[in-house]
Amino acid sequence: MAHVEHLKELYGLPVFHFPEASAAPADLPRPETVAWRIATGVYDAEETWGEVFARFCATVDTTEVRALVVGPWEEAYESSSSKVLEALLAARDRLPALRALFLGDLTYEEAEISWITQADVSPLLAGFPALEEFGVRGSQGLRFPALRHDALRALALESGGLPADVVRGVGASELPALEHLDLWLGTSWYGADSEAADLEPILSGDRLPNLRHLALRNSEIQDEVAAAVASAPVVARLEVLDLSMGTLGDEGAVALLGGQPLTHLKKLDLHHNYLSDPVRQRLTETLGAAGVEIDLDPDGAEEEEDEDEGTVERYVAVGE
Image (cartoon, rainbow, N blue to C red; front, side, top):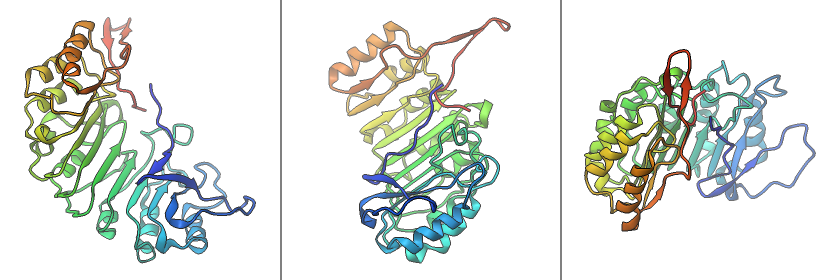
C-alpha cells in the first residue's frame, strides 16, 4: 500500500511551514514567494489550528499571500475541518491575492487518509471566487454539491474512498476554466460507492470545455472506468489521461486499445496496474511507438491470494 506525502509545492511555489509558537524566531520569506503551510498537532496540540492561523495573519502580510496549505488540525481523525473553513472564510478580505488552497495536507503518521474528517467545502469556493487551484485530502464527511466557479483551473480530491454524491457533485458543477481534474475514487472498504455511470457528466466534457488533464485513479473499478473512458467525448481534447493507482487489468486496457484513438495524448499514466506482459507490449507498440509517453510501471502491482476464500485480490494504491 502506497502512502501519501506532504506537499512540496503548490501553485508553483515551494511549501514553507509556518513556525510553531515555541520555535526560535526566524527570518520569514516574502509572503508571495512560498505556499504557506499552516498546521498544528493532531494529538495533544499546543495550539488550535485557528490560533496558529491567527498568529500567521498577525505576523505575515496576508494581502500578498498567493497559496495556502492547510496541514493538520487538532484531532483531524474525528474533528471535521469546519472550523478551519470558518477561519479561512472570516479572513477572506485579508487574502485578496490567494489563488491556491490545499485542505488536509496530512500523512499517515498524522492520520490515515480514510480518517481525515472533512466538511462541505463549497463555501470555500464561493468565498474565494478568484481561486485557481483547490485540493482536498480525505473524504470522511466530505461534501461537494454542484456549484459554479469561473476561475478554477485545477481541482484535486484525494481519497481512499470518494462518495458517489461527491463524484456527482463535481460532474454537475460548471467549471469553465478547469484544465486539470484529479479524482481518487478509492475502494468500497473506505467509502467509495460510485459507479462508472456516475462519471458520465465528466466524461461528456460538456461543462469542462478547457479540460486537458483528467485523472480518474486509485479505483477498485478501474477496468470499468477505463471502458467508459474509451468512448468518452472529453478524451479527444485531453493531453494527459491518468488511470493509475487502481486495479486496472487486461480487460480495461484492452477496452482502451479498442476505443477511440489515444495517439494524440502527450501522456497516458497507468502505473500501479495488474497488466499481463502481452497487453503491456500492445500498449507500448500502439501508443508508445506513436510518441505517447506511457507509464506502465516496470513490474506493476502484485495480486494477493486469499487462502481462506480461494480468491485473488487486487488493491488500490491508497486505501486506508
